[in-house]
Amino acid sequence: MPKPPDARLSGGAPARAWRPSRVLLTRAALGWDHGRRIAERAAALGLIVRELPSDRLTLDLADNPRRAYAEAKATLAVVVAPPSKRRLQPIAPSADWRVDLAEGCPAHCSYCYLAGSLKGPPVTRAYANLPEILAEIPRQLGQGTVTTRQPARAGEGTTYEASCYTDPLAIEHLTGSLSALVAWFGGWKADAQLRFTTKFDAVEPLLGLSHGGRTRMRASINPAAFARHEGGTSPVAARLRALRRMAEAGYPIGLTVAPIIVAAGWEDAYAGLLRDVAIALEGLAPDLTVELITHRYTASSKEVLTGWYPGSDLDMSGNGRAEKRTKFGSVKQVYDASTLSAARRFFEREIADTLPAARLLYFT
Ligand code: SF4
Image (cartoon, rainbow, N blue to C red):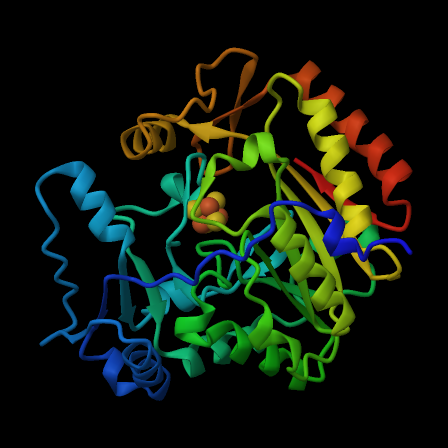
């Protein structure tokens, strides 16, 4: 008898749920039910919960940069998102709009894009004022251009991305925010879709929700050779098992192959990864999309990441790179044109062969 799909995917022990060494609550966060519930969840898990006397987030980090990094990464702060953070921003090509439940992530990926977008110590900040965040979402219904620019997304309606500034599943056991958002979209009878992508596997809280098919989970994946740069995340095989469970629970699903790293052996590694996906989803006919995001960095993200992960051998030397200026004026180091077109051709061919039912949304 053939083995079930997950038995053929090795290396899949689930990651241990994150246990921050302290949970700090600002005074304003305590004024929200959701903030108090996060504190209760943390206390029930035996974590140290400290109520701050004001809305100032006092971190008291060590002077030593290595220790300061470790202390910040081990801190969950529960704060109130100000209006500037609640206002939805366009976020093509992933979605029409960005909706943030938190900022920061407890994992330690040595290419993390947050290093270039978030300033200050890498604390994870969870937002307590969920009702105010939800209230912003309908304002943008019917607005946005991603769906019209990507024909493969016809029928998705207005799309909202919840993974821009955090990995929402990494902290879900502490916040419950993602479950609340999924349920909210499930009950919102609008032509809209929530999306999130994750390098974690703890989907249990989401499986029984009334999601209405209006949330797409994508597993953010890399082959083992490159997933070694993803410290503190769930093993890729466990992420794929979680994706299967979500498909079985009726969610539309997807893959975010990110960041694609074009280094020695990349073609074999990614071909193997796509085969693993096919095995993981065997016997299902899911609504499956694929997003392809190549590795890139800026001068400032490189400086931050090199400070955080001095031992990383991730190539940020500039070899084989070209400069790309963003509309905000910053300069990204992306792969050069010939590397990008080779990667694009490779993935288009391999996805058509290995996952023929998948819809490729974009390559960037
Ligand atoms: Fe950054 Fe995502 Fe890794 Fe978290 S899981 S550290 S957000 S790349």
